[in-house]
Length: 260
Image 1 (cartoon, rainbow, N blue to C red):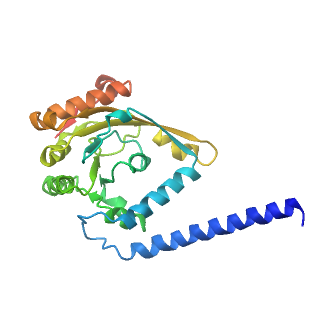
Image 2: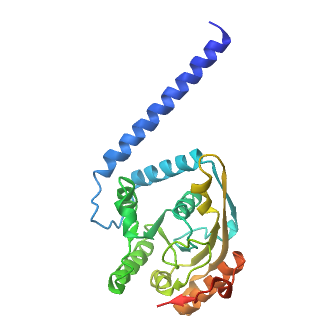
Image 3: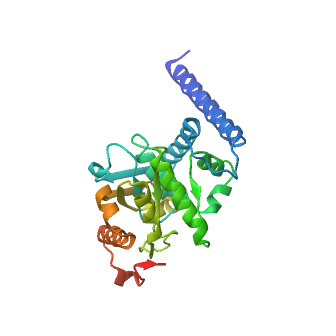
């Protein structure tokens, strides 16, 4: 047997093992989803479902050739929970956040109800304490805010939110819903402010081009500052930091700073 034949057999063996592992994990994802109650809100994180969440999303990033450049990491709190606040451009925003922060903290996002109806994936994020929010009903939305605060108070996980409330199709910062900052006040946790760029390019670039996502941590609002300021003051501080980092102004965006 020649050296080339041995090498080909070795590579074929690796490919078979890798394919088998992917199929096994795929089966694990499908079967595991069956054990999640899709109508329940969980208040305890699951290491197993977290592993599935991280494994598959990291695999997606590798396959899509996504690179993430992170700056301002020194602002990330070294211990305890925090409220992560970023702009919102695509479905890759939360994935980028939980992948880059996974060695420091587990994140649970407040997300639109449609995401929880995605086959298998919706059940996985639900089991990782992600929470749907009813944006049309203020009373229900307040219940979600209280639940998010309780998760951080109890040390279950940190929470990620988008004060814009929905994705910006143009990349311009949309009006803020300042109610979300009550989460940090109720939980007594700091606010970590960040912006993301290029996440909306992933779908355009795949599969022929690489995508470089830029994640910039801009500000850490301490617990003392969170508790001493009103939600509209926190919203203004966060918004101004994001606008500056994105090289935008509200006048350029043609919108108001906040909405009720």
